[in-house]
Image (cartoon, rainbow over all chains, first blue to last red; front, side, top):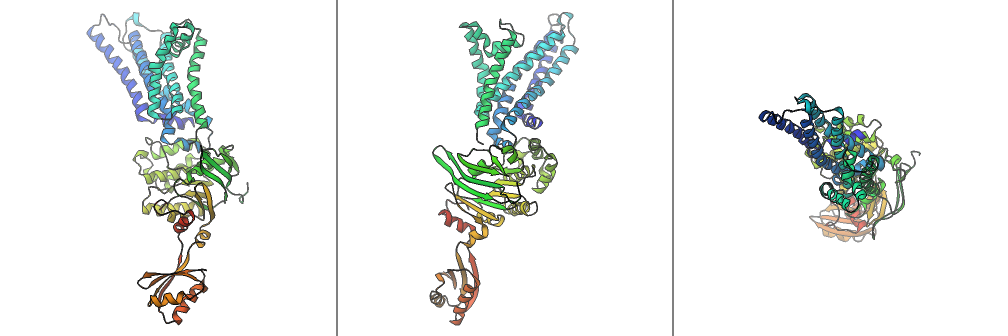
Length: 246
Length: 315
């Protein structure tokens, strides 16, 4: 069932395949830029691989991954209802909770499939392309970048899936999810000015803490806060899915 | 559950949307191995009842049993061997027909994957299975919808307007396919359609819903036999024939249709009545060139029962 659901997500050319290609293109762009600047000013830019490449790869996968994760997640939540296929999924007799759970797991797998090829190519570039000894990266640094580049898109994809399941309209779900990520979430961090702890519990600071950023919040508390930010829209989506008539 | 038990049992089913009553107190059984035509004007509650039977919508009151299981409480067991099309078959347009069926087979389980090729073959899409669904015509999507319905080896097929988008030759094939589900496979088919002449050719039983209420349920033959009873005559002296026929007690109406043709409505519709008409005319010296029984079509009966006009009723 999960494989079937995954196929419906990965089969979408625009969001999934197109998104995957955009991220890969981003990685190749980073490689090309570092090759060019190394060629033009080798003293100032002695490394192509190593730390500069890791920063570039991590940044590209993180930034593009969030945007494309939102697209893929929102569609995972809304598409079946908007397209009218949901009633045929329900008609199979598979319980609605199982359908929703399968969609969630399939989305997690899809985000992995979306990001990991680009990360793999990026890591190979980090390790293989020539770099100055001062720019060499450790396994821990590599792991940190991979963790950050996967967790942020995954969290926003799951939130978008919940939003999509509630709103049931592809365009609206994508728009609201993007607004949440790039307008509402940054604005909410301003609560820090009022109360530091509350500010730290907002999604962006908590996510930053979980992925190695520096706030005073304990990591388990930050993880719990992130879980809560994901759980609320996810549960609202599940509630709508259970209640809706198709 | 025995074979004698109905495959669908509806008992006092009512569905409201706010203050609007879409389906009102509907009760009837559907026997196994038969094809039931579910008819009604647009907006009469046909699709709403189908959605309730398939666990897609909740009833406001009453109970539904499918394959002996209550809907929606035991929908999982009930729907295990039920296939359906509701309103319009929907698919993932970016996947091929075969890939779409693979998606559903993954959910249905239990050998569904092995049924994909035979299902495509059966609906005549074997050669088009590798095309993306967005390239399919409406008729092809309808047929793919039927193929999807067959993946679970269903005892019961519930098809809502399945012949939409089919051309006339496709319609004949489709009719034969539906009959083969009943006659060869022993499946039960519950089919809603606005194409009354098609339903008349496909269905064994008919149920008619009007303004949310069940107004008639019986076999097609019973339904049609209860309709207009008459004969059509072509004679050499229409004027004289009319005066003779108006003198016969069991004739309720004689209508002149021109060119020596008469429409005669009878109190009873048996051989004796037809013989009596012929004899009366011949004895009076009126030549009878042609005599044929006229039976009400399902469409005429449908319009009679629902009190509709051709403009707002199904074709």
